[in-house]
Image 1: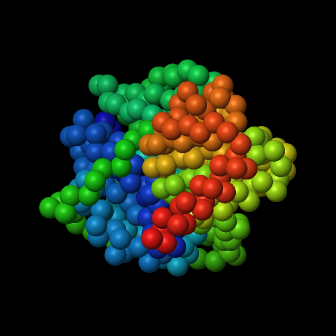
Image 2: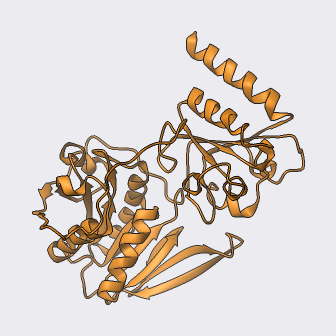
Length: 331
């Protein structure tokens, strides 16, 4: 491996906290590092994240790099790519991994183009085969899997399919040295300015990092009924989202969409309200640990993958469910 056996995992942050999806990179990275006999280096990027970075050794990192600067408080391609370039100079990685979030895909594809490197997106499995990196990834709406490969004579970049790799439990007996990357930005280095981020009403948490996600589908019947989804998400302390059918109808904005052309989620609890279970949607939530569905149609495809299913009128079931949850919390 000409560029080294080191595996570099890039960890996103938000408001000084590493995103939940970032920790999935440790599972894939650790396995590759053991196969190559190299180090697993974790690169934490953000503002005010130095304290959180100190704990990354417990997740399996051999070495931790921290890029902590006010300009990195929001994720931008310019800011993140500049930091990763510095990390590449310092550790000469053979493989760079990051979560397959919108930002992760943007940043790695940009770097792949800039440096003329291979980019393997949406990977569900990764392994080293001699001098090549092999990856499995879904195609045709998750109906088929394909295996792709790239030579390791140059650094290979890969994004990970959300939920495909289980984040390891921290081991307090393990630690890793933490080094600060010297990052500074001149005027114009970051060409996009994030002026603010706002959560929509009922959006208690980011969809990609929430442990509990409630999704509304076309079966809601009306835009007004989406409030049931928001109220249920709020009662559970989770995030609310929608299927493509709902966003196409204009009931919800596109950024709340979960599916093949939306966000990929892997919560501990997925709860679909009026969701039929079309492939376009299920490819975005197939990694959920527990799936519950509420639908009046007992033949809805969602029930084939659900751990629990409620067949009935959601306008009757959801208000009662919210009432019971609130009562339980109150007691």
